[in-house]
Length: 373
Image (cartoon, helix red, strand yellow):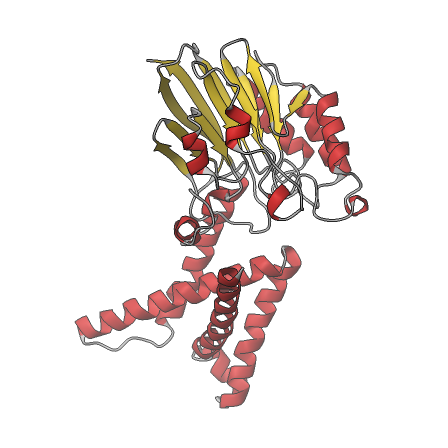
């Protein structure tokens, strides 16, 4: 908690410093000087007003979080452009316009964020191939997480992605949490559950909870509870696993864990990996669905074969995608890792939560082909 408080304070300080920096830089533009008649106080006031107006427009389109994200990116790119212009002047020994860095930084920021918006709001297929010594046969697993329905797509958009997944001919589809969000409407939730019910697989569709699925607020806030979600999923033949283990076709196990938030935030309990695996046949391939990638040591010690997670959104933005693991927020932020005999995959998610950009990754669903050595 203390670490996150320090990070929050640093973000606040950087935001204020960035605002002052942008105000000074924008005040150097010719049209600002003309409007202010080159009066220093008025010049800064107009510049600050432009920043507030820009942030306000972004706030109205999205929200305050994305307004701050956009302006912070502008600060970063402007600082970098200032640095390169300074280096260029030293090398060439020629003077450059005080506005040159700004003329480069503004369109560069817009292009960069436009690409980030595109990477967030479109979905790609990411493929992994795993080999095993266990006699499991070939298994095609399709996994997705973090749909947070209602953020980048609603029920109809979700249904289209399920049609794409159907074309992949999966043996099993695994949903590793945050299927819905606190702001997902009941109508969207029902439509998405119905889309899951139309999937045709050899072994079904399985769901484990994320930290948002049961909702952080009173059920009246979004119109349904976690139990209502379970009922709608099961009505559409989705198997909901809460610290449950299922043996599939006498070939492989699926373990669906309660989310870590049950014991960390909601005063509940979840079973340990030792409890979940103590009675399993170790000769069979075992897949664990665990929304948050935060229990790698115990999972590797339990000798499960594959752990699938989401939650991190792939780190979302550069450089956050490098910081999550460094500060101990999770065991891995994105992608594949192997520890001892256990394979770990963290997906960046099929959608988004609050931030409307992905600059360190892209939205995806994951296809894992498991075959015997």
